[in-house]
Amino acid sequence: MNLTQFLIDAISWHVRELLGIEEPLWSRSIALPYRDNLGLFLEHKAPTGAKADALTFSQFVQEAGLEPYYAQPCTVPPLNMLAI
Image (cartoon, rainbow, N blue to C red; front, side):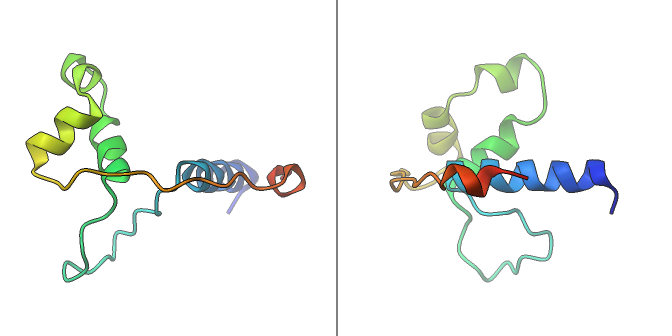
């Protein structure tokens, strides 16, 4: 792993931690419950275009037939934990 990939992974980890979403594992079993709505929404918004830009979170939850999502309070790690 080179330095650039390490930094990308570290930044991604911190963003997921701040947003309170789990890491998308490609080896995830289909027997497990659905991932959190916010993570699914952000994956759906990743492609660019007018349709993705116009999609709102509540619209996504309704169209996908998901249960309403109530965010858990997020704790911000101390500043010394954010240093890379």
